[in-house]
Image (cartoon, rainbow, N blue to C red; front, side, top):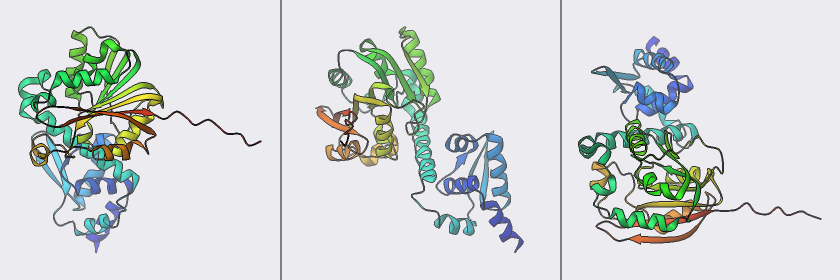
Length: 313
């Protein structure tokens, strides 16, 4: 009975329940869990020790790090987790961040990234027509743009191409390695009006209606929840502003891209994108197809202007 009580006490705490839910889906190191839950390492380490001591989590050392996952014999934890609501917003947010971290880990560990560093580019790796894509993006933007946000900026290639058209550009990415390369690229080009910072695309650290244009180039297929990503992009876009989404259309290489490139979605069709844009407060304006070895689609949308208030007289 003592062991059962110890496990019940260990699980009966909000942060520890979140840790159990995450570690039931895979193995995570402490730094990953710090990033997902947004709590300090000492605090999470104490919670993890309690869960390990109670036999709910298994700790596996690896070099200077350690990985945590649900213990094989933790049947009580599985019964508790089965009762947690799947739609709980906090748990759903944890899953989205966890999925993004997993995708970033796969991307950073890819052979192309290790070998080519700043020259690595997913579009190039897939053989996509970079010049045609750049021309399509430039053609979809006004001649002059005030403030532009590039979500999932990677090594800063798109920001560099758009720099001459914008007064101020900000790029966000979850990967510190990518951002380090982007900062080097932008500094070498003398683009002082363009900057990058680390951020989660589901929780952008920017105020509402802060940008005239927002871009997501080859980003959405990594998203666990594309609707939430587009809603957050729309939130920071001013009414009347332009949202550009460039990504793969439906293709037949889902198995390959899901494994080698950690894609979560096998391309997007117009109906799916429109279905997410509407609730986000955006109106689809036009689309374009870029010919190449894989189908590439550009969706251009505008943020709805606020409806005029109607007074009852």
